[in-house]
Image (cartoon, rainbow, N blue to C red; front, side, top):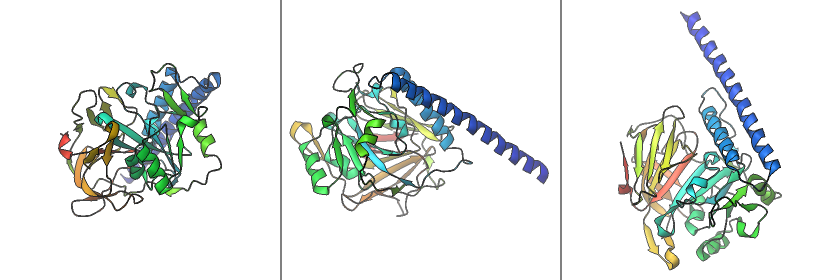
Length: 345
């Protein structure tokens, strides 16, 4: 009996290695196809290349969830990119699947916008559409990022950057690194290319940090939540997550558009909008403590988030005060004014 069990274990290991090798070769083939497309026309962000990127990301996601494979580096050099989520821009989004973390906040008109955090040594070929900065994006990213990249921003955002001394790049000043796609309607057509980020960060002293910066591990407890709904009070912006057993992540549909990203942990943080100012700009304070919901592996867990000050990291705790344990892989954090706008079954 033991001999049979050992034989089955050896066969399973061999099969996993063969599948992994085949998928890695597939990734290299697609990556070469992408690079060839860039050589033919560096300034053209083609649909063909976008599809190739999606295939690479899907295969990489599968590989990352094979438990027999190594878990990867323990330190990252994180950089942030502000990405638009207007309904016109949404079909043209690129690079979300490759982010370590995505933070989602409301902006003017109560439409959401993303701060996507990437590892500098593992960037997608194209990121965007890139949009303008707000001060709470800075607060939410600290101290989990070395550099913030964006296209314009509110006066309050530039004041916050100067106040906290956060390294930043305004893409409106760098037309060679932030490029326009003529096939996408303006102003939703500004994209950041991988070579652009590498040029902008060359020679900069960017410090690696331990990643992930929160507890990860096996599922502790939680009730069933395979379908999650976020009510944005409009079918153009409502969000649904569906848990996928194969990827161990969530398929995200936003206003009818399915995202390339499949986060493994979805955190919803409650923080009210305290003010609607000039031009409809919102004030969201991320210091203090608030309610939180953690969705992972088709379950939900209630708890709290804490942030002592702007430079402090988010802390996530369960109702007993223990650290919430997140799943390995991409984390998606959405900040909403009230958790009552979240439902699940």
